[in-house]
Length: 126
Length: 126
DNA sequence: CTGGATCCAAAGAGATACTG
DNA sequence: CAGTATCTCTTTGGATCCAG
Image 1 (cartoon, each protein chain N blue to C red):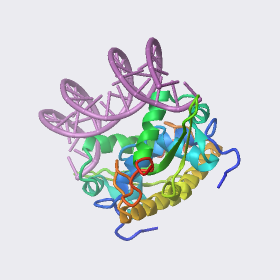
Image 2 (image 1 turned 120 degrees about the vertical axis):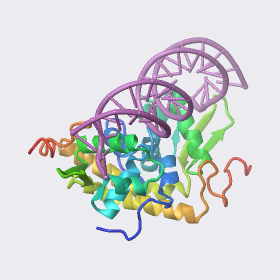
Image 3 (image 1 turned 30 degrees about the vertical axis):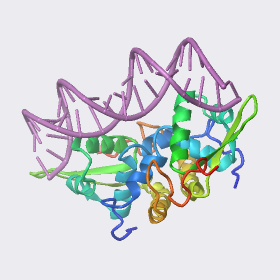
């Protein structure tokens, strides 16, 4: 299926991709998008392998980009939660699609670096 | 909108995200997905800022993952073209959605690092 | 509890030169 | 034309310690 003249030369895909893809970024967005507002610690719990520093960095970038909203209650101890902004919710459909593909590929036995078992390697078949 | 129990703790999102997101990877997929089979040089032309090494690396990884198919004609000079595999085409909808978001945000004046002009910074407004 | 600051190791990206 | 090989430089990510 063709999308007339939709190639990325001078199209706005690249800056947006830099903002929403990348290690952990998409996972954070998926969690916020599917689970609703989450506290810092809750996000940590959902992603056991992320470090606090990286999570902080990603959330700051996403906030600067107007994609997530940070809300802090000035209590002690502090309570900070994050949620998608109005604009950030534009990503919901894309994230859903990505999630569906992930589920499908997982069910088909896809593994990173080895592809799909039923179709081992196109070039190895010749 | 909630997606019951769809958080990423022990869901297959992460490996798939590592395979299809990342610098240049998504852009390559979008080009192949929207333009059809493309030769190595044509991909270079669509992404003026990528280097041959990085493009080669990404294409190899995508091929190993069963997402793109590499076809080489044993002529001189060689002619190699790349296209989405059957499985790779699963990503089409997600890429379309991402492209639409990119177009929308661009039209709204979104800029990386500054967010949306109409909504400068949620915290700066207080 | 939610980070900020710092240091360090590892991965990634670019430039250049070379090949079938 | 379509890469490979090598080198360097930058960027990232993880660990640790500290603080409001």
